[in-house]
Image (tube, one colour):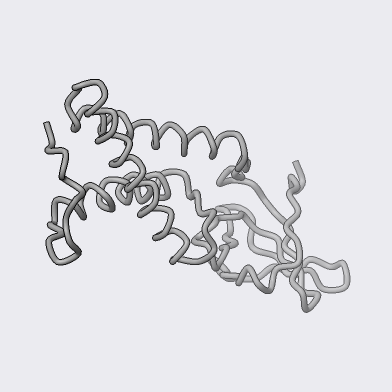
Length: 173
C-alpha cells in the first residue's frame, strides 16, 4: 500500500520513484507501441511529452483514489491502468489509423513534383525517405516521354517532400 500523502510533496521533494510512476512507464508503453506499430499522431514532441505526463499523472491519481476507496494495493491498480492504456492505444491504432502497408515485392510507379517518374520495388525506410530497389530480374526504370529507361542502380532514395504520387501496379505479369 502507498501512503495517502504520496502526492503531497513539495517540488524539491519529488523522488525518482514519483518520476518513474508519472512519466516512466507511460513513456515506455508509448515508445514500444510506436516502435511496433509506427503510430505517430503527435506532430510536435512537446505534445507527446504533455500527453505522457497527463496520462501518467491521471493513472497514478486514479490508482491512489481507488486504493483509498477499495483498499486494493496501489501497484496492482496502477498496473491495470498501464495495461488499460496499452489496450486503448492499440484500439485507437486499429480503428482510426488503418494503413495497409505494401508488400515488400510490390512494384510501384513514383511520380515526383518535378515530373520525373520511377518504377521499382517499394521499401519504406523511415518517415523522411522511401526506397525503390530492383529485383533480381528487373531493374529500376526511369520513365522519360513514356519510354522506360533501365538504370543500373541497386536502389534509389526519394524524399517524401518531393513525391507527388505513388501508384501500385504489377509489371508484365
